[in-house]
Image 1 (cartoon, rainbow, N blue to C red):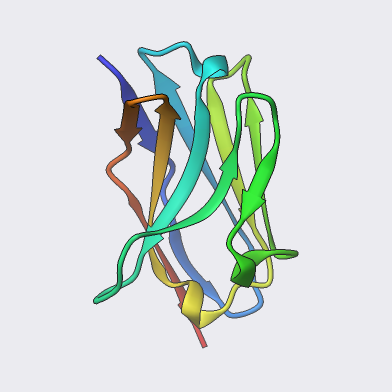
Image 2 (image 1 turned 180 degrees about the vertical axis):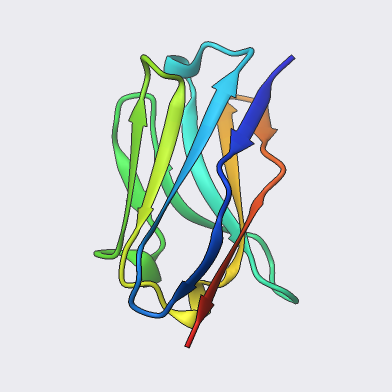
Length: 115
């Protein structure tokens, strides 16, 4: 059974920082592309950042230069460092693991940025 468990999000003031982590189990972590998605109220879920099994990264334009995704294959964990947070970053953040047709999701964690 695959499990993705996100760390607690939280409430942070605009301009602040937060680091999310996602611990994976039940899969060969190093073989999976790992992503962070977010969904704000009334909006569709969107890809925030992706790190491939090869370590290549991709970011949503609005977070480039502020967010950094990384992975530690030895710990089966993916991270999302979020700096210079803005109120529009407020959303539920979800961890995702994907390989070919296989995709798995965490339960999500709330991040709220106050102005």
